[in-house]
Image 1 (tube, one colour):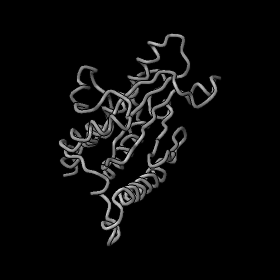
Image 2 (image 1 turned 180 degrees about the horizontal axis):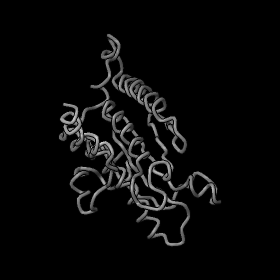
Image 3 (image 1 turned 45 degrees about the vertical axis):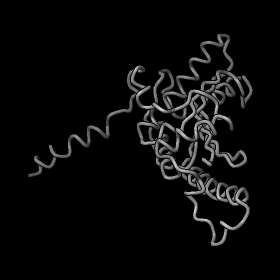
Length: 225
């Protein structure tokens, strides 16, 4: 009987021990079909809204239970209040779950930004998500699926590099791998904007320590409305 139970649970144990891999690059487009390969500007969000709703997305106003009588007030004020309430809860959920080195959660107006230093989620010498990074991104995916009335910008950054094309390619690779992981964990691709920004927008000095910080993924989350 014990042997039978061992054989029964063996596939589960093996799957739990199997490291995550992004898979062949030519398969990525299938996972992130519906994502936009561009910055998440206000105009881009407006243009994407029909695609997002058509794919099953919902607006933040539909996700928040406002106080009784709120519908009789100013619509813009009510929408803003709904967005602030929703994003505050999202920020707290992320902050509470992501207390790890190399990871920070910040507010930018109504948006929430997760900063993931590359070495916190990816292998040091290989272009692949690490086991620790997979755990972190799985946690993020779970929270994003709970707070699903949002758009998501996934942006990759490098440190200063002489070859700007290489920097752009490397940052795009990091962003794409992160997006594929989230999509494979049921985050709706129609919510996503994916972009590689190379060495633009450094957040630390270009010394040895600062370079590690500038190699990063930023996941910017904005209310869908």
